[in-house]
Amino acid sequence: MNQRNLTLLTDFYELTMMQGYFKEKDANETVIFDAFYRSNPGGGGYAICAGLEQVIEYVQNLHFDKEDLDYLRTTGLFDESFLEYLKEFRFTGDIYAIPEGTVVFPREPLVKVIAPIMEAQFIETALLNIINHQSLIATKAARVVYAAQGDGVMEFGLRRAQGPDAGIYGARAAMIAGCIGTSNVLCGKLFDVPVKGTHAHSWIMSFPDELTAFRTYAKLYPSACILLVDTYDTLGSGVPNAIKVFTEMREANIPLTSYGIRLDSGDLAYLSKKAKKMLDEAGFTDAVISASNDLDETLIASLKMQGAAINSWGVGTNLITSKECPSFGGVYKLAAIMDKKTGKFIPKIKLSENAEKITNPGNKTVRRIYDKNNGKIIADLICLVDETFDTDKSMLLFDPSETWKKTHLAPGSYTMRELMVPVFRNGNCVYESPKVMDIQKYCKQELSTLWEESLRLEFPHRVHVDLSNALWHMKNRLLESCQI
Image (cartoon, rainbow, N blue to C red):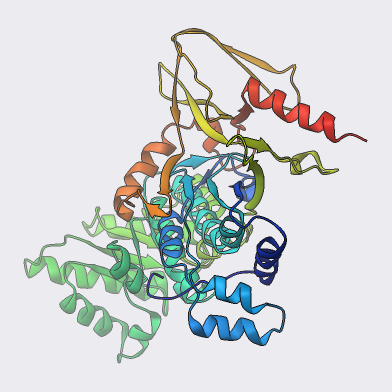
């Protein structure tokens, strides 16, 4: 991504608004925008944020080439004075964000931009494009990994992804959420993540017979010998021929370090149990039984309930496209404008007939509250940046909409941490993105802070995202002042 100029990866109205700010307002007016989402994908109990590294690369490379300006000139809508301004356009503001791999919940800011209004407005589209996509796929992958109950999950949806970028960065997001490897070689190269794969049915069909194909593959890759057994007859020839090859390898004193079979069609529960029995009887009790074929978290959970003898899962289409929930729904809303005289931020609020679309105003951050005894998440608190809290004192949490719903936290019974970290200051990046596999470790730790009830695939417990008392009163004062 950082080798391409993505400056024009934007909605056209971002540029028309920029020119409007340039001509009719103070272009250096400092504002705050929040990026957040309103509901968890797939009806889940959480989401995983991802894509920050690519946002950083985009912002660092933000500039208008001569060719960009020549193109904008052809639209006939932009004055030469504005195009001249764009020649030197760079991002000069601040960005705060929740790190990749963090468990997140609806309505809390994932990214906060504090910048001159033209800059903050312009980066909206690309920022949402990147964060929405990778957070969606990371969340989907986390659900699939959870359903697999500790079995390895491999991402291999590249050929079904909606284009090269979706395949590359979707695989990156899937690795963040816990996949053990990807079939995407370019993703492996770019992000130093494990690449894995076996062979296709065409490999088998290209040989005179199945046994020859298996023997040839085993000779080439004795330490990674996973054989696809359903090209012709899974139980009649595929598994028996695989057993024959494994037996020959054992008799030749070839170490059986990573070996087994893959099932790609048919009744996976039935076939895996039959195959397991055959492998066990032949003395190959530790053979991998891998499965693919349009899997997702629901089907994997069902196969687990049926006692399927599968211990490795290859998930493609339904993961890389998040098939049943194809969008994350992140939005980017104005939260405050700086008063030039006082230097203080004036909170702004967007009203709507739909209560869930009314925004939270002001300069905010997010603090996560944990149970001190077990480290599990109690709630998230959206609060103003200058608020302080003392965990040695009691705390009252309340539902922002149904305020009679309250939770009292006793002194010393909870801990807190701020989720947002500085990423850019005065246009300079002050944050170093971890490697993907390090983010994966962090994400696993994050998921462990969720209660089991919030992890379940259906009807999960909703983690509360509350407003601080000060923020709640600010919001309601603005609501009352807007009433006609």
